[in-house]
Length: 125
Length: 107
Image 1: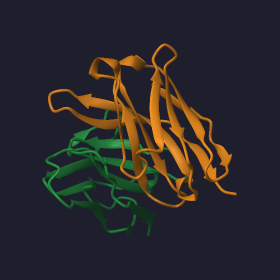
Image 2 (image 1 turned 180 degrees about the horizontal axis):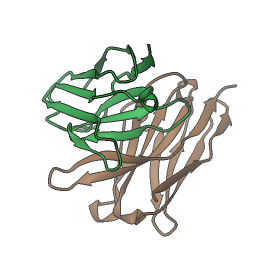
Image 3 (image 1 turned 45 degrees about the vertical axis):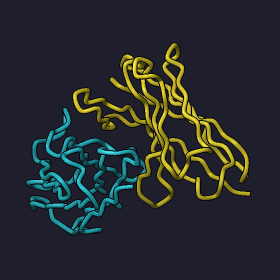
Image 4 (image 1 turned 30 degrees about the vertical axis):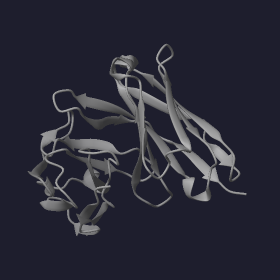
């Protein structure tokens, strides 16, 4: 079974940094693009970014709202995706979900087929 | 970014009812649209992708339709397990924007 387990969340002060991890199992990790989506308390879902698999360059794309403060990386040998959050703001408080992105190759489009349970990041002084 | 607007925001229905949720995009997303179900404290679950394709393991009472800017999610006969919040999401372009959600409540 596909499993995605996020870790690394917690309480952090504004302006500080945090790195979240997503440990994957049950599928061939390096065959997939991996994505992060967040959900502020009581609010809707917001895409944060994704990182492509190596044959597609291993490059990342980010939402405009976080670009410049966020870096997504991957360690294919250990099946882990990372989300580095820098210069954290109170509005970054959210549950951060890791998702697997399924590529529709002919169209070059991704949809998010499996999700982890999320890890809560609280930014507060 | 493309804006996704769902209606209604809240829907009250009974077990056995047929319900429809609508999602409108601010510009065409072709058929690159997904629907998710989320229960409190849980991760979203993919129901439908590419507007009308049923994800493996999802009951056939769920169906999706539409293209361009208007889409619908239909549940043919509500079951107790279906009371949850539903989100649409476009994956035509970066932003991968979600609708604001429709909360399906028990009448």
